[in-house]
Image 1 (tube, rainbow, N blue to C red):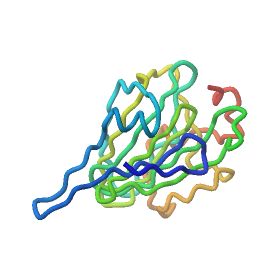
Image 2: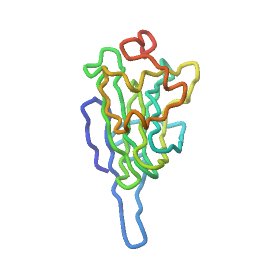
Image 3: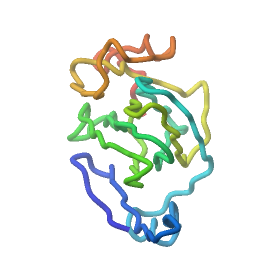
Length: 184
């Protein structure tokens, strides 16, 4: 596995070794021994999958307090722009983001430590997105910041007229307005 550090401490791009031949390809999408050697110990307890069409933006979501989640995300089919925003109080990169294109073809994965707001935009006609979490989802601990917060400066690579949001995702506060909601 090739591990690429990003500008945010703990956010890592993981590139698995892919073995291809005329039949297709094979790779280990997760190997605990290799993951712990390169990233560290994380107890994943929940796997999630979503399917979305072009222009869908999901996020920027996070869990607060004892319900914070580290995530390992990947795309099985299609292409997304995956985004992690550092919302760890006191972090030197607070409010900064990392954006990585994850595709069914490049097999890249993104590891997000606890303390990140997370979201993605669908760049292909459709995308199947999978992720592991190290903590269970808790509705009472969910939080979010606006996907289009101008202070974050995220280029979602989807024209504004093509963006498709849930009602919930269209009403989140900016990071500067979130106040105590972002405290982890």
